[in-house]
Image (cartoon, rainbow over all chains, first blue to last red; front, side):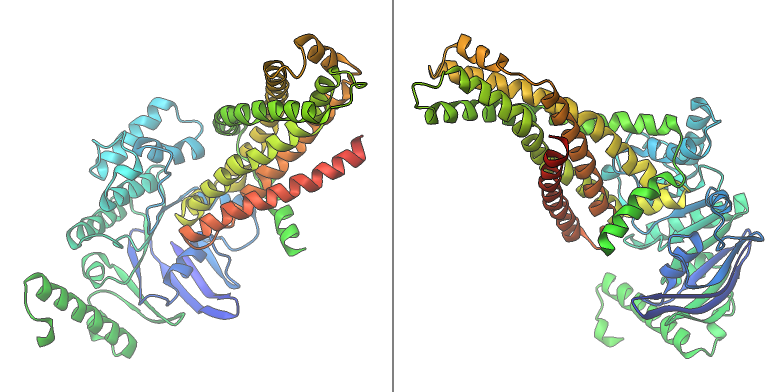
Amino acid sequence: MIEIHNIHKSFNGVQVLKGIDGVFETGKTTLLLGASGTGKSVLLQCIVGLVKPDLGSITYDGKVFTNNRLDLKQEIRRKIGMLFQGSALFDSMNVQENVEFPLKMLTPDMTKEERLDRVEFCLKRVGLEAAHKKMPSELSGGMKKRVGIARAIAPNCTYLFCDEPNSGLDPLTSIKIDELIYEITKEYNITTIIVTHDMNSVIEIGDHIMFLHNGLKLWEGTKDNIMDTNVKELNDFIFANSLMRAAKRIEEEGGDIDKL
Amino acid sequence: MKTLGNYLLFLSSQFIRSESIKILSRRFIDEAVLIGISSVSIVAIVSTFIGAVTCVQIAYNLTNALIPRSTIGFMVREMTILELAPTITSIVLAGKVGSNIAGGLGTMRITEQIDALEVMGINSTSYLVFPKILAAIAMFPLLVILAMTLSILGGYVAGTFTNALTPQEYIEGLRDAFIPYNITFALIKSVVFAFLISSISSYQGFYTRGGALEVGEASTKAVTNSIIAILLADYVCAQVLL
């Protein structure tokens, strides 16, 4: 379980996060929902330690991540798996080496055979057993995301963070990636936080949802009660998202968007 | 002053929590190949022609019949060992190696690969930068020795080919009043230049923000700042060590 309390962050005098609290439960997917520029990614970066919050605390299973104890931070970081927006695969390594990399670095006691077995298992789990020797440049967007997920879960992560896992993917691949993240969360009972602005993801995989707007958490709840909210900003967001989806569908079917 | 402070913090961050010797040694070998072996051809071409041109131009200027022709060999040797081999080789390497380091790290930064390392709990400066600096420090002196040899050889070929002097005169000049310390001086300079090029370029690349345009800017800055640092350090070394 991850707990955040009163997280503040400013960049060059502009306040991006204005005191956010939240609890992210084990075995559940929590979606950080909101339009672009609302502070979702910055909050995620604060939680994983890529950005230091100006104020507030972050706790991983009772261990305070925001204190200055380097050994504790390292211990927590080694349990973190992250899927980046652009996948962030290492260009100079093939798929197998990318997935093997965290094992090599974080588990020096593992033998080469054990590592390769684990890589094989993880690649099979994400449906990429035939892509071992491919370089990242030879992979499609969806395949890169799958390799990113395989790399994240390879060292048996306890916490999984996904920064816009659907960005740049077609709707069908997006659903598959969402399902994969959801299945992995349940299968390994991990704490998963997903940054998204995709309402499809909310419907498909959102156990718990936090809606951010202008650096504030305006609403939180489940996908079952998201439609009952009276938060204007969230309603506007859902409406705009639905409108966009409807427009896309009409366009795909060759209809007239102006009739909307 | 702020940039200098950030640069020093960047250098010290490599030692805060460094990776294991096994991992670093593997990375060192990769970087040594990239920085050293892949630079052999450019260093060979540049130094051979510099030696040849130096010899031809000294011969052109040496019109006084009272000065022995062997002086050409002597001057080629002195110029090569003291200045041309260490400094020109380093300037060439600032262009090749410096831009490569800055471009590589800059691209890793904007594509979140450095963030991925940090999230895994890996000290990215220790893992990425430290082996580059070590490899540069180890490989530059070897490249400078190669440059000295080929430059003097280039002078020999050019001098004898153009009949500026005979092979015996050239060799006589090479052996005349030789000071072994000059080679030590050149190698010390090459180590200093190696450190400056690799660390400045790494710093520029590591803190790239933005996109492809900024990666290009970081590479340009890495090369220009490295060259300025080389020239400054060259003067300081000459003042302090000679």
